[in-house]
Length: 286
Image 1 (spheres, rainbow, N blue to C red):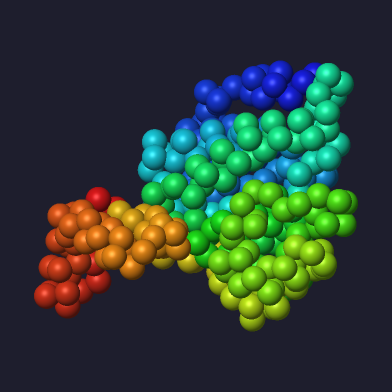
Image 2: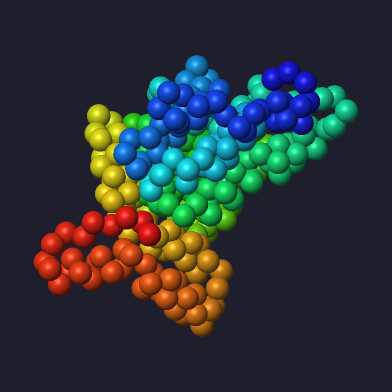
């Protein structure tokens, strides 16, 4: 990476070029539409999809494109034999005026963390198909999905302790809530691989599947969710996140507010009519 981190980030054009099928073109990722499912592929296979700050800037730009593309579900995966091997340590800024710590803080604050927040606030379901190693920030990205499927050969790794660093990308928040303090401590302080099947047993991920079936099952799940009442699904994912921080009374009030919005939706009317008419509902996400 040439020049300072700030210069690198500012050089990325968020008003991306559009391909002939009207999906945005990027340098480090691909964004493709299949029906109403958007597939975001981390696309640096020669580096095991190691993520420089520029990649997460592009991910954030891609997330902003989803409403205009008509996406009703997002599938995230990696190109080649890895999901994401972590932050690209070779992609650090060459700015010698700032300490390594200052540069790291800047890249987290301006690139990685804002993108993780944007992902958490999406109004559509998110599925991760982990096709290989998911380490460091890649582990955080994979576990931020609503449904994380992993190939049996894949594994999850909080590698930070092995190089004298601490977890980031929201890992500290997510792991403690997903698998409890003891297992989160194991992952963070021992820095050992957690195989896909063990991750499923722990409840860290949704499902471990045969390698050959990963993308088929991930796409099938994404399509199922995209064909569902995505307005309600979006409120569910936000409600689940907020419920982890709220009191019981506050959660009841939130549910009432969300239910009022859902009850007035076209999907709720369609769902009710389909039930009465004993047919499958045709949800539109509105």
